[in-house]
Length: 224
Image 1 (tube, rainbow, N blue to C red):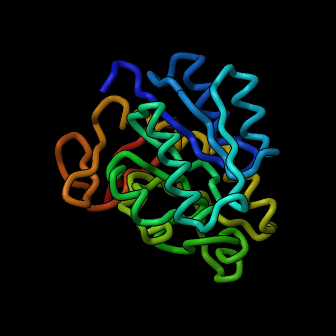
Image 2 (image 1 turned 90 degrees about the vertical axis):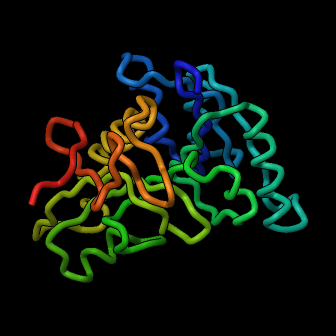
């Protein structure tokens, strides 16, 4: 691995988590280089953020391919050509085929707005409120072929309050979600977090529970 972790980001939307990575790189908090931002939507705001930062971009239209497998294969071939050390899914709204994920095992992560394993998939804020959960949050996990089911690296938890709506809850969570992704990537970049035998290893020991983001923005093992 190079001194600066080479990262490719896949995003379908506004790119706020991408911006958090760019800002952390600029201010010296992350020893990374974002080498590519790719999207399945040519008008995704994430691509504009990347262009503004001088980062190479790629937009591919899934409808121009014969099937999902063909799109995935071309996308990942182009990503691989940039030689990233890590792929970050930051609001990439497509399910990826097992064939393209397999070579990247342990080198591809996703940020998901729920306390996994709760609420895989969409509408997580609405589902947490509908279930009457006292807390909600976000998770960073290694990506596997099963949707939002790979080993979880770290989480942020926030309380749900009586006045919360799905939009209000999402808004309150978003800033902490950014902190979570930056802190998780920092641990990967430093070599303190890795995937071994399908388990997350932190400082040489397998985690029994995801790391937790503290109020100071640092990740640490959960206390009893």
